[in-house]
Structures are given as C-alpha cells and as structure tokens.
Length: 90
Image (cartoon, rainbow, N blue to C red; front, top):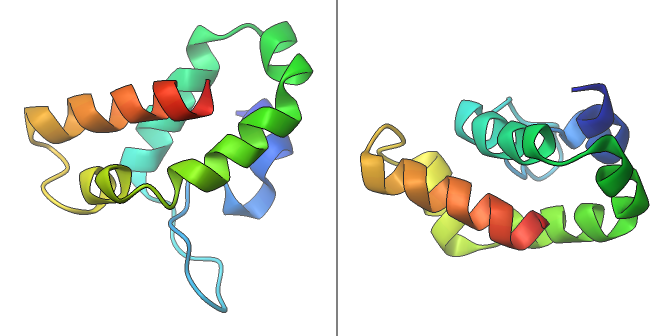
C-alpha cells in the first residue's frame, strides 16, 4: 500500500473527478492492489514511471471504467477489471 501511494499519491484508487479528489473506489482498490501484490518491489520500482503512465491509461479505458462503476460484483465485471489492470499496468 505504501508503494501504491508513492506511485499515485492522493489519486490512489480513485476515479477521475474534475476539480476534486473523488472517493476511493473499492473495485479499483481490489484490482490495482492485486497488481501490486503479485509483483516484486524491485519490478515495481524499476518500472515506476511506466506503471504511472499506464495507470492514466487504465483510468480512461472505457471497459475498465464500466467494470469498476456498474454491477461490480458480477463475475464478468470482476474478471474484466482484474484482467485489464494486469494487462494495462504491467
């Protein structure tokens, strides 16, 4: 969690919101936390800039946004958001 905060700061686990910080989104928290948990600290640190840039891409991916906004407990949405987080961040 410390590394994810170091990477994303106050935007960590939040949907983009104009002119405000936004609330923590649990679906984003789950998928991004999982990405951080399965990768070594060395990998994460050596790819920090790329992961930060990819996080921006993740948060504009319409399929990912749908998976973290609507019907978040459906099996399909869970699989989609975890798969996209791994593909885009990694």
